[in-house]
Length: 402
Length: 229
Image (cartoon, rainbow over all chains, first blue to last red; front, side, top):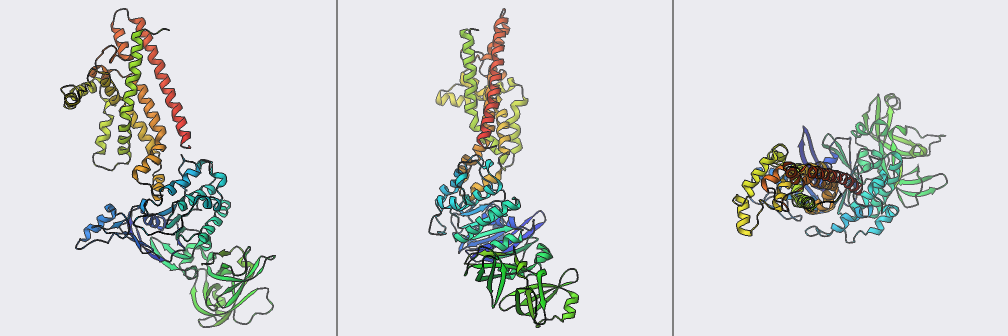
């Protein structure tokens, strides 16, 4: 479990964040630029000092400004954030616990890569590796097996780059090296600060699969900062929705995808329930698959998946049709039975209807006049219609653990 | 052009004095530059001003202050003389010290500029990879500021070849001991019929200075490509 509580006031901006996420897994800090995501992970890494902080990873306290012995006064606590540096987690100083970043064993993948320009790719990769282990004292072993150079090099496709210098790499290559370098430092957790933000669309697509492999092949907890919902959709197992320095909501993707405040961040057209399902059948030539989602089966557009694999799909609210009678003679491939559980006013005279389809909730945006003429109300049984082709580009294979 | 033994002596002394001054002051210059760039302490502006004093003071005044402090009866000079038998005033080592003090601001300035160009983000990255402060300095910060360190050293060396006022005041004009090229040049101008000699020494200074500056530029370029910029 990762438990984070941080407070930091700076230039009239107050960051006050509190979240918990299961480990291992990928927790996404999601929100608009400037909402405090990067500040939060800077504090988790130890590079930035908070006014108040408590950071706990798998039972080890990395930072706790309020931890102190006996009868110390509050005034000491404020100083603690600045000065106390205690070796090893769990030990206590008079003024608080603060493991310095170089001993936290938390890998950090920066938005701009930050490769060392005077070293070859190989030396960059080895930098953290040779320094790892030395400081394992006081921190419980994250994973029993060591992360070796060769598997990482081949996993991230770095063989042809090893002798190059950072300035000879493309943006995508830099980020892959940066990922490898962080992984080889034998971290007990990885922080990723919008590692794809500086890349164009093609480079993003080049790096994303590597991030997915990372998530699927290692049991290292990750905190992934992003303001792109599609990245969160593909990578995250847990989402913390942030705005203006605060946490608006947190939970699984399905839970957070139903939060009304999400609309203000992703835009009305990107609102839609996220469902996780297991592949029951595949039509490879059509690029379609049948997903078992809760009690129902959903036919979606997704390539390269096999029976038994897990697939995540987002059903955009604007693409979902509701019917109050059994539909007949339609081209729609998915008809799920459900019950209306909530109605909420949306922008432009629209209404966002939440329908429970047996274990999972989906969202549908309909006009207010449709609500009136169909008589939509809470408790009403409806058919939820989803065009299979509308899911194209919104369905992704995720690891078995998700 | 055949050099006379006296000219060769002056040339050798100039090179030795400049080299010793650079070797001696380089570590201090790196530390001071680091303090001025990264240090957070009260009185930083005072240190900054103090380091730059040789740029604005008359070199003779610097030489005189050195004489007061490092002379055999000065607080530091006396201590060195009584305890270790080291004499600085009127010696080659003294000439090197005077040269070092005069060239110090040049060196600090160059190193400081290069340090300001080192991205603190890279040091932060090294931190997350487990590098401690000293380790970080030697593996990240120092290599990245190397172009400035080298350029500063070569510039200080070239400037040191020509230091006059502080040297003649503190170390005097002793042939074969402290009479460097500029001092020999001054002596030649002062002596009747020394015009020919003076011209030859002036040409030597000119050539040496030019070589020094070209070398500085070349080294800086080499070092920049070494750090991948």
